[in-house]
Length: 290
Image (cartoon, rainbow, N blue to C red):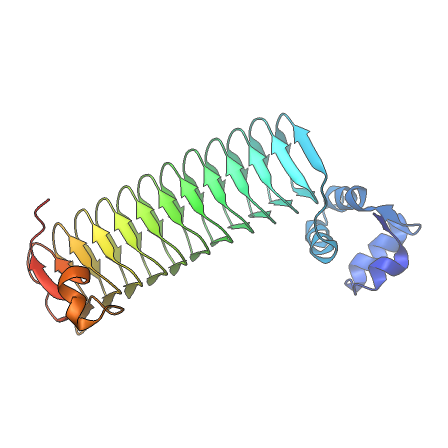
């Protein structure tokens, strides 16, 4: 793709960025070489703006490893080993690493992000598709995914975690912001959210669910230990915990919100070590047998 002066100008770039373009590429430039030149000049934000304006390509870059200040690539990155960038790692399509991925400011992919090790970022992690890692994910800011998020170890998110697909975590899940998942959540360890939790389908957690605000799932909620929220607890179908189910002071526990009252005994059961206080709906079935 040849980016001419008029072609770039029609996208309404900032004045400083356009002056840089005129000084360095007045006769135009191919797309990826221009992205590389911007990154080399320390104009990473301008490179990201350019990628947003002109979109991804089908180009694939295959390398053994990446160790750079920043990387902005319009196609797919396929890295055999680790990726280490001091600031921004961005690809128009997918990012695939055989090892781990580490970035100081942001990891952004138009499609999938995959890592054979861990993902660690001091900023945000964004993917238009799935995020899949063989180890863990630790992100200081938000995580956003247009597909599934899957980690075999823990997931630690310093702000909101939002995804359109399923969330599958082998060990513990900790979020500092709102947790919003449009399909299912399955966690092998404990799930701790320092804000609200909303799930489009169901939740299954091996240990406890601890929520500092409201907890809601359109299907059922199941925990191997306790379900404790500082706000209300709402399930479209059943609620089950081996230990206690407890809502916040003044809030209620609701099961069967999408089930007819006549079907509560079959599809809106509530099981816990003792009957929850302020159980507002659902069929109390006593303690779990297994």
